[in-house]
Length: 276
View: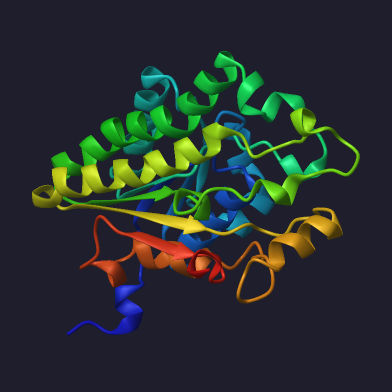
């Protein structure tokens, strides 16, 4: 019988995190490192030099690394996997975290977000990063884990994979209806698609030792306008948005042996919002 400490122990396990330099990607990496794991921060913006920064090692562990990856390019993903296998000799986990996510509450987007004027190029770009990218990374990196008969994939979805966005949150006084900003259609489509991908892969690789789950986080408070925060908080039973570190425990749970009898599931961490 293993102890709880052993179940959460990630010592020596290598986990690649796409979108690793983003707000939540870095937190996912910290969660892995806190349990002795080795996070690989994979991002189109990542630079290998980041790994040589003493602050990087202090935050993510001496063995951690950053690697530049374009998740829409299979060659780039294969190159990153080869780099990881050369450096560590193994790959144990994948967190599909990369996504395009315009901040509607920041006031930066109005007309482009509306369905009637949403550009096909934007649709294709958002799906390429958030959904096709997760498919390609799962196909290539998950395929390697399946070959080795052990691994974990975590797809980062959203509470908006479970419910539709409440577009009233983004309204701005004085704008006509046809210019009111909305959460773009691609966000819901990508995040909902990740749940379907999770279930498919979980059953596809069930006999290959690869577990696949999703996490659906709620909105993170990070300097949004007070009015927006108040509106969203009123829709959440806990009465507030998430803090940036409040998903780390769930990520560690899903990546570790603590969740060894869990696959094909969507772990919702949203302060209760989807209960209402």
